[in-house]
Length: 98
Image 1 (tube, helix red, strand yellow):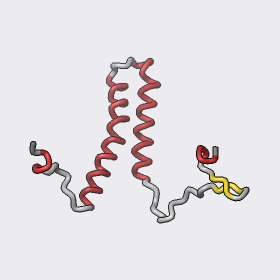
Image 2 (cartoon, rainbow, N blue to C red):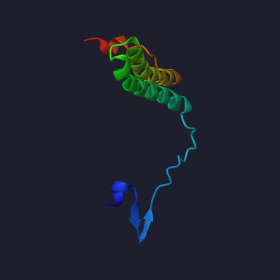
Image 3 (cartoon, one colour):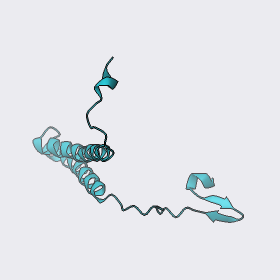
Image 4 (cartoon, helix red, strand yellow):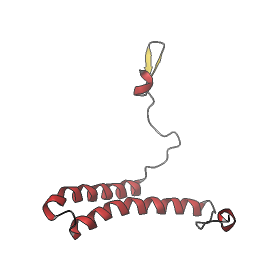
């Protein structure tokens, strides 16, 4: 039961990890911002769908924005991380040759 809650019983006491990152990295504020914008756009599209019609430009554009903003942020983060490691963002032609 302790494993399911993230606690470990040791000698009559419960050990719960503090949840702090020992390396002290800063939180990803840009990721938080992009995911908040995306989630708010999707929720707005779902809420306004019955009122404006599911195929209206307002609802479709908002839903697309809600999906594209976090996806674009994730893609940019992956490409920037690869560029920081000196890896090319393009596919290796030798690896894709059949």
